[in-house]
Image 1 (cartoon, rainbow, N blue to C red):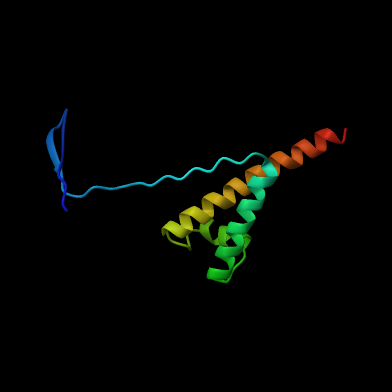
Image 2: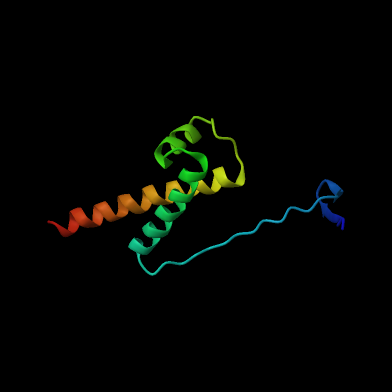
Length: 98
């Protein structure tokens, strides 16, 4: 089924024949450890599928060598989230040890 979207704006009326659907899934975790566990499970699946470590993948991603498929974008986002969470937990551990 084709849908036509019409938009009237400052540049007149335009018609788009294709619709883009974005599915956003958000999971809420009860603790940072639970979130890290879920991320690591995700990494294991990607690493097995693509036969490379997440660290190697991310280095290649940053150099623009991995493309922009849905898997690549999701894996990169998960890795960025992992690094951020890891840094936050390390800071909390250092602060707790003082």
